[in-house]
Length: 249
Image (tube, rainbow, N blue to C red; front, side, top):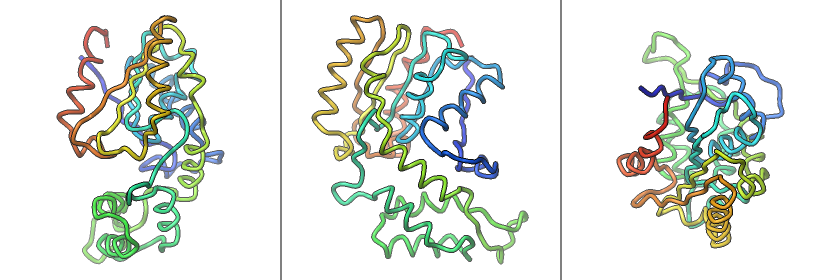
């Protein structure tokens, strides 16, 4: 039987209530998760990260001697190890979204108020609706008159996104230790995040890793944009499922 651990990274969700000093970076976020894994005394065999989280799981394996046993399989969903190419082709740019949200009041009267503000600013409806899932009523009983506050630390998230753009983990991917298998998944409709240079470099790393006892694989999820888990969840599961076969939990 498998156990799954879904983590709110620093400055996100319930973790945002922990007043953590910076730096808020990919590396510090990865170290947080490693400490959590050690505290819980669990040995992850599969690590899955989406977008920013993709670099986090790579950084976890790069930093860890223990508690990560080998073999370990790493999934990087719609992200590359190096340069971040976001916001092309009319898509919502994360940096612009963060900047806009930081201008909004800390408390708002309704989620729809925020959705409307985002739509007026030119962000997509899907992103606007996702953003407001990060609002919680100030009244614990959820009174209809309750105002809403953010559950994330936007200043910290801005710092994290800057680190995401600047963090380069190509050297690690191209020199994987034995027992580490890294899978990159590209969303079919997320072409702006993937340059031809990225694809060539990943395929070259596939050949090199095979020679050195590590592993790199490239996958494409059809009929999906960047939000792979909502655009094509069944297809995503079919690609991920083999990672859970043949390993003891």
